[in-house]
Amino acid sequence: QVQLVESGGGLVQAGGSLRLSCAVSGRAFSTYAMAWFRQAPGKEREFVGGIRWLGTRTVYGDSVKGRFTISRDSAKNTVYLQMNSLKPEDTAVYYCAAKVLGVIPSTANEYDYWGQGTQVSVSS
Image (tube, rainbow, N blue to C red; front, side, top):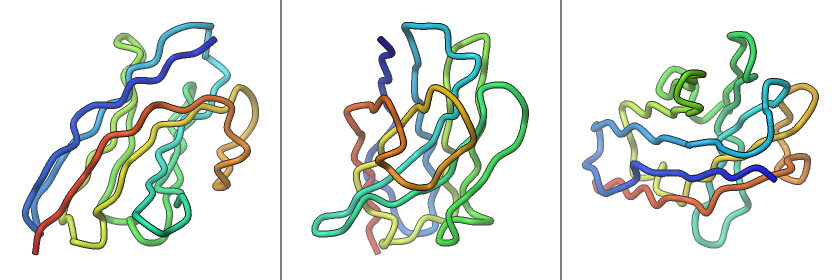
């Protein structure tokens, strides 16, 4: 089993920044693809971006390109989501997800493990 624990959410004003963390524990995950998704009330879960545990390739959803950055610290078994220039429409519960093998898919149902989510609220 793999456990994912998100932290770092909160309330921030528009234009501000937050950094989310996803602590990963459990089975060996060197082959994993890690991703961040978000879900606002009444909306479907949206792909924010992803990164392979090995390598540097990252992909991002169109709505966050140029504002959000994903990184990981292998020594700390942690994946980060740095969010800059936040907008009220970024308000959502943010989830960390892991896929055991393969590329970084943008559809939620292709991921094997999920964290419990952390709330991000951006005021105007």
